Image (tube, rainbow, N blue to C red; front, side, top):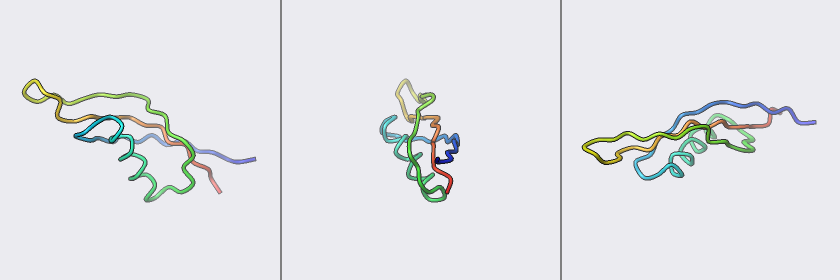
Length: 66
């Protein structure tokens, strides 16, 4: 039986929500090993001068505790 843990990470990108999600996983993987899945809990944007300037995600990352 595997023991899993969930952490919540916020990340951003100036390209897309997908890129922001990849940034969350990339950054988390620097200190967390054995990541198994991610769930995008929420998405938002920052608007400057009537244009989207930043995409933000709140991601729940699940990893195995060894």
